[in-house]
Every structure is written in C-alpha cells, then in structure tokens.
Amino acid sequence: MRRGPILALAACLLAAGCSSTAAPPRRPNRTPTPRGAQKRPAHFVISPAGFQLPAPVQREVAEAVGNSIVLAGGLDSAGTSTDGVFSLDPQGGHVSQLGTVPGAFHDAAGAVVGSKLVVFGGGAVVGTDHVQAFDVGARKGSFIGHLPVALSDVSSATIGSTVYLVGGYDGHTPQSAIYATTNGTSFRRVGTMPIGLRYTAVTAVDGSVVIAGGTTGTTSVNTVNRFDPGTGHVTLLAHLPAPVAHAAAFVLGGQIYVVGGQDSEGNAVRTVMRIDPSTGGVTRLRPLAQPVSDAGVTELNDQAWLVGGWRGSTVSQILVARLAHHPA
Image 1 (cartoon, rainbow, N blue to C red):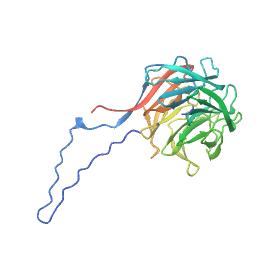
Image 2: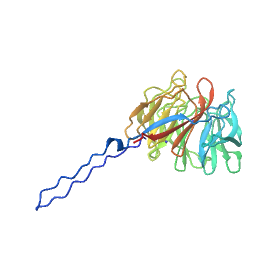
Image 3: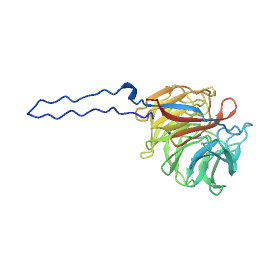
Image 4: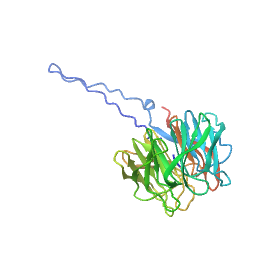
C-alpha cells in the first residue's frame, strides 16, 4: 500500500571588506564559531509511537484526514478482509470506529479526495474494480465508481488534487499502467512502467511520483523509477541495495525513505533506505528494531506513520518516523 530529505544547512560566507585607492584593503575579521554552537544536520529517527492498535491489521488503507489518521479495511489476524473504518488519534493513540464501507477489502490503494476517503480496488478474495468512498463527516460509506480494470496490490500517490494509481494485479498479470483521477469516478491512463509490478512502494516528491521496488509475482525488483506527470515519462532514478516488495515509502524533508518490506524469499525485512531525489543516491540507514512489511503508511504533521503490518503474523504496532536535530 500506499503510502515524506535530510535538511541541508548552508554554510555562511562573510563578505569581503571594500577597498579604495586611498588605503589598502582591510582583511575582514573572521571570528570562528565555537564548535559547540554549530548546528548539526537533522537525522532520521523511527521508533514506536508509545501505543498500539487494539487489534492487529495489515494491508489496510491509511490516510491523514485533518489531525487524525483514518484506517480502512485490511486483513485481521485471521487473514480475513475487513470493512471497518477507524480514526486513530496520533496524540494519545485512541482508536474509534467511524463506520464501514460497503465491501470488505485488502490490498487496495487509498487517497483523500475532497472530504472523503476513497478506496481504489482491492477485494475480499479477488481484486475488484470497485471504487468506494467514506464520508468522514457523515460517517457513511458508498460505492462511487469503477476502475478501468479490476485491481488489487495497487499503490497510490497524490500530487495536488490528482491521485495516481500505480501498477497492481488484475487477477492474471501484474500491471504496468499508471492511472490518474481527480474525482475517483473518471480515470486517464497517463503513464506506463517498463514492466508490470505489484506491491510497489510509492510516494510523491517535487511534483513527481516515485516508485520503489515491487514484484512481478515471481521476482522482486530493486529499481526506483520516477514518473513525471508533465511528460508522462517513466525514468530510472536509482537502484536499491536489494530487491524489495511490500515496503512503505514516504517523504520527509524532501528525501525519500523506503522502509521494511519483503525480500525475494517473502521474508519481512528491517531495512531503511534514504533516496536523494535530486541525485538518485541511496543511503542505507540504521535498520528497524524488528522487520515489518505491509504496513499502512501516511504522512501527518512532518511525521510518517507506519500502522500495523506483518512479520510472519499480523501485528498491531505503530511506528513514527521523523527528522530530529542533534543537540547543539
């Protein structure tokens, strides 16, 4: 599912003094800044939120709505698709049920469109072309449309008012199409990946959609591609150190982070990688304390939240990622 660089600190140079013909130029005073007073760049921290979900869930949709995180669908600890919609308070961890959507699902993509949480595809047993919406204010779910094809294992990212749906599985083959919608009811095919992929980690940065990892169904990949909505082109941005699918992707401080996922053997992994979107440079960061894949992921108040997930069994953990400054 779906779903934002280390902050660079510019060094200041003192301007040189003016010269004249009447006197030689004066050398400017340069008082060194005490080392203890220098600011250090922010560093990435990911840690438990201090509270957990009341029940395990994986492969759900997670989206920030206002100051809350709304969770919908997913697989419970018994591996059953669910239809519940819940609100998670990121301050204290309280979870309350808001209602339900008409169809139970997992492996869908999600986005906030207007005041509604919109769920694209997924299903209880096989992928569907259903587009469901949940009005958070009215606490009511409904079917609002159909995808161009039935899709599960699909990912999404939002730029402005446009939602981009990436890849997925139509019940027969992994998909390479990228679709765009602004209302959840009409869709345009706007791009094509080099190969069909499921379970990609997708996020948006600098007006582009970044697509990390994924699986063809038989082989996981280590590619990181960038889709430019302006041109419709998909280009290679980077390679990850190892193939991964079912990972979470988000952006903090203008840098892309790819967290967790599954390796080529289907094992949950602990890896955390940072990708510089301007250079394609990939940096492996300190790994997670425990492996996790298939977490719902969303960004809220300059933090990224990874909710639930899987590591051999469904988990109820909540992780929070942020950028922190070293003390002066």
